[in-house]
Amino acid sequence: MFALRRCRRGRLVLTGSAAVLLAVSTGLTAAASEQRADPLPRADPLPRADPLQRAGSLQREVDAIHASGAVGAMAEVTSPGAHGTARAGTAASGTGKPMPQDGRFRIGSATKTFTATLVLQLVGEGRMSLEDTVERWLPGVVRGNGNDGSQVTVRQLLQHTSGIPDVLPQIAALHSAAGYRAERFRTYTPEELVGLAMRDSRKFPPGRDWSYSNTNYVLAAMIIREVTGHSWAHELNDRIILPLGLRGTSTPGPSPFIPGPHARSYASYGTDTGTGTGTDVTVLNPSMGVGSGSVISTTHDLNRFYAALLGGRLLAPAQLDDMTTTMDAPELGVRYGLGLGELPLPCGGSYFGHPGELLGYHTWSGVTRDGTRTAVVYVTSDGGPHTQRAMSTLVEKELCRTGS
Image (cartoon, rainbow, N blue to C red):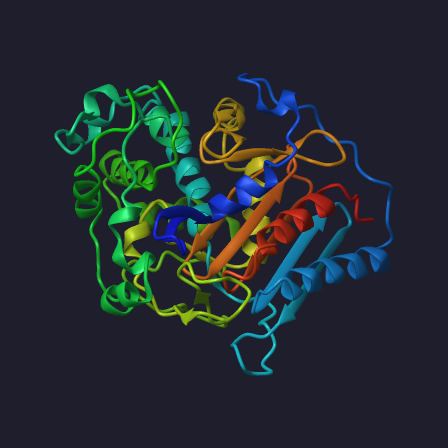
């Protein structure tokens, strides 16, 4: 999830995945920031590297992430004829235990790509439309303080152009160590989350601007339930996790524990990064992130998912076009489609992906437009001031490499 935390001066600032996007946006070309719907040109790969050279490069990139202040780091990349993994650091601070080879972690806002895929599958089946209003499926749910579900479409939810306020500032566990200790086992219902968000005024009239809001994807999960008669988690398992064989991926519901092998996660809560590990926040009820940030996965599964998605295995061409048609997201300095961001590559062109962060676990995923090259990296702490830039650099370099 794109989280907010309190900085040393006491104001709320974007952190985690949002900071990654902001860092990546540095030096964007004018063409990348123009208001337009056509995709950026395809990237030309860097010169071909042999597998040993690639393995050494990936390990150096992961070592650099660890050296920037992360407790642990893990990356996995795929391309035609090549596959590589690398890890650095430890699975728990103060120990010599290595990072698990296929460890599970909370993927945070990368969950949104899964949720958008479910909605677009239902659109492709003719069971709903992107132009349906929220009010049609959830009458009376989005109302008050200028918020009006009859004016907001499903497309605007997935695109973050709804103007609906973000619920995250209302979640105490995400903003302080004391809040975490008090509420790490608290269960939120989707209805409760939307109700909390409705305490704030809408940010702008629907369709008039762009602003990131996790509430949009909580509402999308609720709409999936109304359309199908099944929960968001049920549909995600039935339509994506099981068909793709994502054995390390799960929807934990209110369970605060991560099943299977995993490294511990640490949050600094706005203290100086790079000067300490922070608070151990591995145990967390992620129900505040239903539809928006609660999925648990692995680097292997995320690579498999993004390759299948951009490779056309999960969506019909019309719906994949909807997802990858991007617009300027000035709040973040990048372009955004439906549950996917589009970012420039140093070798030319662009790639798609979505960052994620949920209390200590930070991930960055990238995939080329044709789905043939993927890169996923995650860390287990907030790290230092250069950690997130090092993560995005790894993804950029690996997607620019042919790998065989």
